[in-house]
Each structure stands twice: as structure tokens, then as C-alpha cells.
Image (cartoon, rainbow, N blue to C red; front, side, top):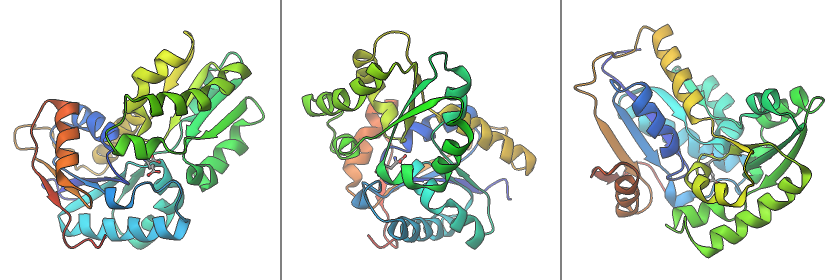
Amino acid sequence: MMKSASIGVFDSGIGGLSVWNELIREIPGESMIYLADSANAPYGTKSRSFIVNRSRAITKFLIAQGCMLIVVACNTATGAAISTLRKEFDIPFIGVEPAVKPAALASKTGHIGVLATAQTFKGEHFKRSIKLYSHSVELHEKAGTGLVELIEGGMIDSPETRELLNGYLQPMVEKGIDQLVLGCTHYPFLIPIIREILPAGITIIDPAPAVARHTRKVLEENHALDSGSDDSEYRFYTTGDPLNLKHFLFQLTGEVYEVSSATGLKP
Ligand code: DGL
């Protein structure tokens, strides 16, 4: 891996920015290129082959822009496509999966809630988690159908979002969960609302900080960590409306970033 190359980060839309936001804190010296496939969001209701094809096309696009490592900042794409990407491309890939392990280790009630997309529950990573942990804890899974569309549509704090979340979370609360695993990178943007819905004492688990620490480790192991932070550069591409991504980035960081259309990547 070359030190001057960039890290690619992609998601079906803006959700992966919850991971990017941790990456820029953990490895501030690295340049990054973020790709939001917003024209095709949500991935969670699409077929596995659709997600594999998109992930492959996005990977080619990011490598053509000079990326030497790719963070698949999407649970759905990780579950559906990361094993194919690792077979087909000769660069490291880092994925995001629902953090069932830390939740299982921390749970005192033995009940864990997992909110993720329908496709993530079908993915190989989640199936492995069930095998490993379902003997020690009871997993209460719920697909967050409709949430990604509301987040992508700028309706994070809306009555519709609150209503959906209430319907998804209350049954888990009634089962006695003490850990809620956020299994979709869009959902951390809902944490303030989720906190209002959940009773005190339930821990919300977002895997993004662990993913950022793991990315640092992989860079160190490959002797590719850039320790200087002066020349790092962040670039943003989207298959959707660049103004939407620009606006969301401003809300998230207070900074104005240029966002380009991902021309060359078919919608
Ligand atoms: N943010 C993604 C995830 O982590 C994708 C959600 C979607 O597009 O349905 O699963």
C-alpha cells in the first residue's frame, strides 16, 4: 500500500458518514474519498446480486480515484458483498457488521435488540453472530424498514421517524433488552431520538469507533499509516443530488465541502 494514496469509504447513501466521522478523528493524517450511492438507496430491500454489482462498480470507481484500502461503511453491503470484493480485488477491505459480540458480553438481562436492514439479517456475518451468541443471549431482531428513506430525505427529526422507531423499539423494551445494537450505519444519526424512546439503562451500540480503530490497525500492519495531518484531503462523490450530501456534511461537521457527481459510475 502506498502512503500517499487515499482510503475509500462507501455506503448506499449518507449513513457511512457516521463511520467517516470516526475515521477522520482516529486517523487524521489520511486522505479519504467518500462515495454515497444515494441514487440506489436503500440497499436493505434490494437483492444480494444487486448489492454485489453495485459494490463491485463502486470499488472500481474508488480504485480509479487512487484508493488503496476500502472501508465498506455499510452493514448491508458488508454482509452481501465483502467476501466477493476480497476475492476479486487485491486491496484490503474493512467492513461493518452489527456489534453483537460486545452487546452479548455486556448484557446482564440476556436480551439484546438488533435494529438493521432486512438484507443485513440475511447476510453471512449476521448468521455467524447468531451461531456464536444465541446460546448465551436472546437476540430480538427488527428490520428498520423505512428509516433509511427518511434519513436520506432529510427527515431525521420528524413525526414519521419517531412513529416508526417507537413501533420497532417498544417490543424490544418489553422483552427486557439492556443493549441495542445499531446494525445500519444510517441509524447513529437517530441516536438522540432513540434515547428519548428507550428507558434509561439501555446501552446503544454503534460499531463506528471500533471500525475506525481497526482501520488504524490495518494501516499500521501494512506500514501505510500517515502520521502527519497537514496534507490530508477529503473528497466526496454521490450518485444522487450533490447538494443534499453537501448540506448534510455541513450539518454534521460545520464545514463546507465540495461534492461531485460520480460521473463514470453508472447509476
Ligand atoms: N447504511 C447501510 C447499512 O449500514 C445501508 C442501509 C440501506 O441502504 O438500506 O446497512
